[in-house]
Length: 181
Image 1: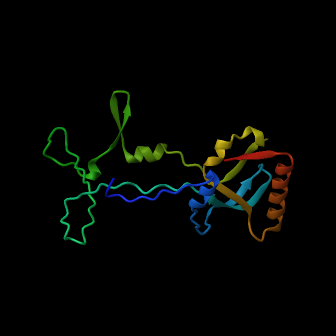
Image 2: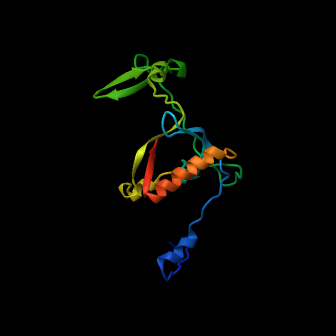
Image 3: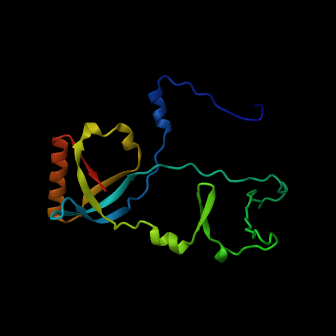
């Protein structure tokens, strides 16, 4: 405790601490451009932007004190290398092209090749579809804690702007929310 330095700050109210939180501004980038399918007959051209995103803390890296203190270019980071060895011959190293991923199924490990894994992977088409509407009171507050996306009509497309604006106004007036995929 003698070697560390700290600063104690007394605050009047918890709301005065809100100034300590900082936001990071990033330039908006569309994550989707295409049709918003309201029904099979009605599609609205639009763009989806990411409004907020969860900020992750930097990962903790392994650190070594073994570097000499006189070396000013030492990074002190540790690089980990893994070697995979054959069960039959423990002295033989298995190269990456001969390895297959294994997944636990009960007490045993089932090997699945990358080709099989790619064949069974779910690949949906990129789209935004309306599944239905519900009352805004049915949506719990903690559902809003994830990333927030903004859907706007395609700029310059007057019909799309009018359609999306009237849909948003009707939802606000009726206190409804749209459920989309």
